[in-house]
Length: 257
Image (cartoon, rainbow, N blue to C red; front, top):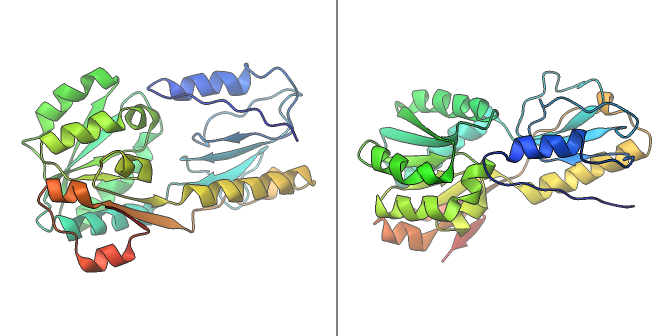
């Protein structure tokens, strides 16, 4: 089996990967795994037989996706509530939460909606801060540091590419940070809670195998994540003067010491 890989980071990542999917791959392919939002249009023509979409979008028909798309979605409404529950254990007086998102990414609306809905149940006020370029981070942090108790950083390419800078600025502002993927925490963030991506990639491979053996993508239900990881950075907590409860440490899948 021949595998071709392509990747992109930064604010225009979604658009560059879209060009690759629909115009930048001349040879015939049997299946595609795209780590992008599943609501993107599906390529047509003989070179695109099936596509598996492993991404953050929500399929309109989860049980029977239709067309030539199926896959996995990392967006689960319940996860937003769990993220805030975890954060409140470390920041018990949390009343103001800031969210940092890439305004140029069309797929953040669902994530923000889930966070806002969960925040209302806890009586937390959410203020959104949006950027288009990494150069805007300094001014954004200057604006938010006096207005929030903690910061939730959406896991999108532009912010992922600037995760070290984001965590450095958060530490200077003495802001606890919550993330959706562990790489942010490995780069100095306080904690993350989100799907276990290695397990999702393994499930994506299983779906590819099913399709190459003759299964129809339209009849394969879109899967939701079943494994979630909690990652905590103890040195960052110490720098922020925060104490991580023993019960939370016991639940963590990984603790950076």
